[in-house]
Image 1 (cartoon, rainbow, N blue to C red):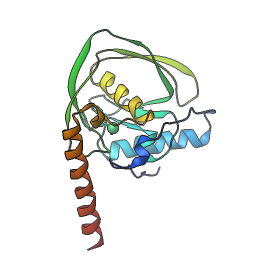
Image 2: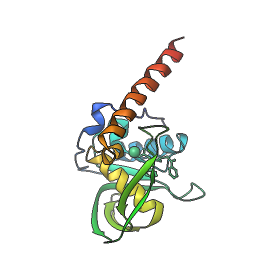
Image 3: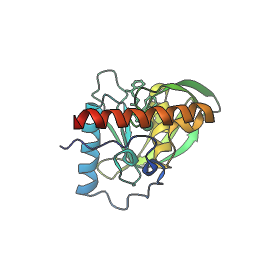
Image 4: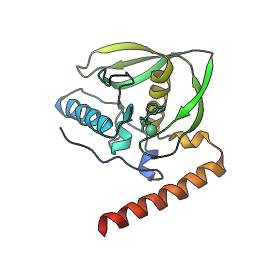
Length: 173
Ligand code: K1U
Ligand code: ZN
């Protein structure tokens, strides 16, 4: 299992729109396994293929308390959304240390294919509902900071550029 590099905002590749997965083969299964390993290593609860610079409709998540209920969603589509909306704090492995409130549908039903290529439906509530909507945004090239005000977004962009530059400097020293 390999740990993959996670793109950091404002990398322009985070705005690529992912293409559908045509066939669930060994490459896709290996990618899903590597994404899960990368997500657990980074202590996240979700990860979209876009974030590891693979522009295919694939996401992984595990919002369980024991971090032992991995989900692989290939070609996910939202087929139902609750009218009820809910605001909650979000974070993103591509925007480390930044958390802010975003409004999402409280419940969503998603149709996807699993790691075995078989279709299934999942009704997501609570953190899982937030996470799956956040990850599906990534597949459309959208990062959660785009829901924030232009001023906040500019501040975050500046902070991330500085953080990345400082980390690169420390790594070289
Ligand atoms: O970068 C990502 O897309 C992963 C992201 C998913 C997410 C979590 C919570 C709300 C929206 C999106 C994260 O894993 S953020 C970091 C995290 O570990 C976390 C955040 C909230 C609750 C529990 C964990
Ligand atoms: Zn994210």
